Image (cartoon, rainbow, N blue to C red; front, side, top):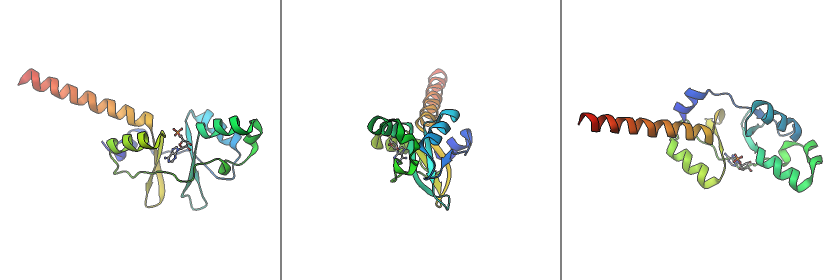
Amino acid sequence: MNVAGMLKAKGRAVTTARPDEKIQDVALKLASKKIGAVVIVGDAGAVAGIVSERDIIRAVAEQGALVLTQTVGSIMTKSVITCTEATSIEEMMAVMTQGRFRHVPVVDHGALVGIISIGDVVKHHIAEVQMEVTAMRDYLATG
Ligand code: AMP
């Protein structure tokens, strides 16, 4: 299984925001869509950053609730690690574990084409392991 297969199952919709949107509006997007991160896109639609619930919590903890009226560009992570549709599920697990983040935007020739969360990775990994167990059991039963 690779990222293309995961996108086929979950779809390609990505919730995005512009760098000049207020943090409170981005928090509203996270809450209403029940997601953990929003990809920040620039004028040409290219990935400019990522903001997760952790960034918002950290900003509020450090600066107080007034920070919510500031722009999301001021707290976003600018050096975003992305993947392609060819990235394998094993590579995704390694990238998320090493980087200590739970979201990876999928990029194709500079265009944002999807997002993979740690939940997607775990779901497909469990399905793969279950298929292997079933195949092994069948093999042992018929061998
Ligand atoms: P998360 O675990 O996704 O909630 O994110 C934890 C931290 O990593 C936050 O500061 C995010 O802005 C940052 N982050 C999330 N995803 C990525 C990514 N793909 N590349 C770089 N930083 C990220």
